[in-house]
Length: 414
Image 1: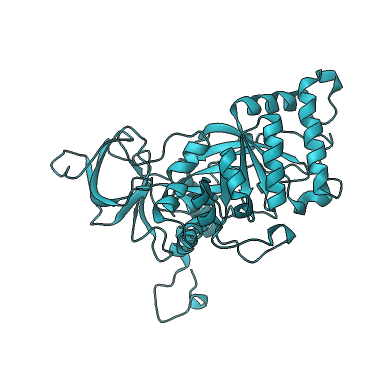
Image 2 (image 1 turned 90 degrees about the vertical axis):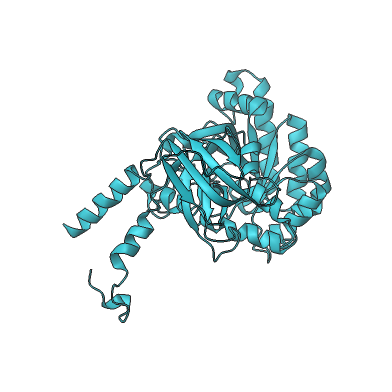
């Protein structure tokens, strides 16, 4: 009964992840980072029914149903969790808990119409674990499987809703060397197949050989209104992405980009953003021999829009450390904050993520500098609602943390 009671509590927590919120919420004495490159300023924030109504220096006399005194702590927009499979991958080694990729599909075709949003589970334990660390949205990805085109996704909000998607449809394309062995034994096979697939957009449906009629319609729509995220680390692969995108009139984004600094001018000229992990330094493969810690700083200096991802779904919260290391290696603090708050929403077509009147009240009150790993999210606010700050991990902590500090955890029998 004890185990069943624990899991029942866990389910109830997932279903009621937010506290009931008053209509009008007032945060006073906040050291507010708006979400762009402006420095922090002492401001108060008034929220009315989920939206930010006023941001000003002194609102203490304004009537509100609930008042939170930030006591000088930093307040930011809720953060972007990077490119993840949150809500699609619970336990990697359990087949029924992973819905993010295509493998060994019997058709043998590429399926850009494979839409991972249809498998998204907002009740996944990964969501509150990530949310209580200060993250409110992510780019939901079709993970790279055994096809050059992996599928499609979009931005997803961590608000607990079953239909929490927004922004532009995003097609995921893998052109790095690690998957070349799966696609004909060479990364050149990726480009051969991609060129052939896009040539099929102009033929009759009866003559399609690499994509289905639905896939053809998906690619046409994405070329017109969507985005294409290319997984590429080697400078030469990134260069090929730029050429291919010009040829086929695509809006590309580079994911990975360990050697992106080598082609920074080309990326800036083409207006192509790069989503990278600023912890990448020592090469993990021959694709990243030129990886360096100041990659983000060099790209930003060249005029390239830089975003961050940790490359991990279950540890997406490490992204603050990623951004902090980028700052430690030359990126401006304001650029790092924007890369984690407002810029991802802007790039991927979502609703604005800034602390400004008229915008959704997604905010975090921090114990200290959000780019310092010693800091933590004291309070997360989504749509003006105070999060319960509970997750599977906090519940496990409550259950197993010993009450007697003189004994180790192994001696405690719950």
